[in-house]
Amino acid sequence: MREQPSDKSMNRMRNFVEKYCQKSGTFTHPGEGVTEAVVLGLAENVDTIGRPLCPCRFYPDKEEEKKYRTWMCACDDMQIYKYCHCLLFVTEDGLPITEYLPEGHEGREMYGEVKDPTPDKGRPLRHKAEEREIERRERPS
Picture 1 (tube, rainbow, N blue to C red):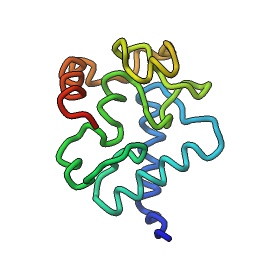
Picture 2: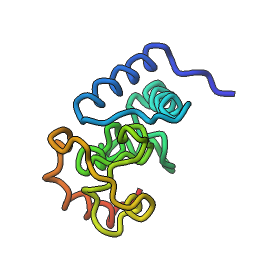
Picture 3: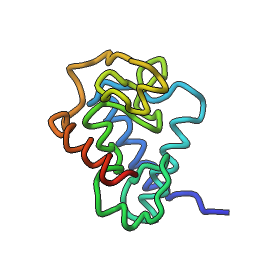
């Protein structure tokens, strides 16, 4: 059985999530346990590899993945498209925002178009969408 993440990392990630919700105009998932499970995974990654690597993806080599910022929370998809794979940053109803995702993206396929209730907040890397799509094709992760 794995040890629990440190209180320091748990508090750090809870604080980050709270502030990022305010900054991005999103909410944490209303479903019981969803937010806590993601925060736990983020804190565990902070303790083991020193970075808040998204816990909702599989990485053959987490140390290798650290070289990229793609899946560090808040990940590139969140900062470009305001889309959270983990369902950590969502609408008040618990849906991921898909409005800005490119056609054919898995998020749009699963959830349809979910409008951004606060389009004036978030998406600081929106200008990098084209680069992200090239990376998605060339370095699938």
